[in-house]
Length: 118
Length: 118
DNA sequence: CGGCATCCCCCGGGATACTG
DNA sequence: CAGTATCCCGGGGGATGCCG
Image (cartoon, rainbow over all chains, first blue to last red):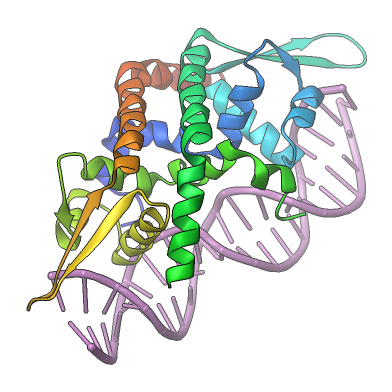
């Protein structure tokens, strides 16, 4: 049972598959201040490979979270920007990072305590 | 460069590793109404294997999000419950599911449009 | 009941090289 | 510049079996 029926029908699960992807979140966060080109995105998301960046952008585009605008010029220019839907998700991403900044210390403390205990 | 320095030092990334895990979110959500036993959790999270449930619970315990209480009785009884930290994360999980329920239709529409186009 | 250990398979995703 | 194509490896995670 690799693809559980319940998991697929659960809306939260659908979103988790998107939100859960770190690259997606980082990409959405990178577009918070406006549209960016492919290369600009690559620079703002350290560690991402071209493959994953493209793959992530396609997924976000497919889900209606970002727009992909191709300019017919040489050299080629492609701009990526958040849609209204993407911006609503951006709020969640910020809530996530807020929680992180607020509680990461507690988590790290808990980890240290747990590791030293066992 | 398998373990990128920037990624590891970024707090949001630390949290994403936890939040990003679907099993973690589902587990936290399952504990929203109070403590549950191992088997009860397994029942409330369809599709999760014993291995992943244990692994997830250990991770959540290590991060100080859940408590693990062993009762010295036969048959053995182990209760899991959210900590204060875990409950603060629960708020985020609910925000996630709220977003999901609100916008999943838009996402599915966008997907259908994208797929029929290409 | 509540695990841990082991085996094993699959694929996510990094590295590299090439193209319109 | 903005990708695609190919190769390849590590580990995530399911299935199974054994313990306290």
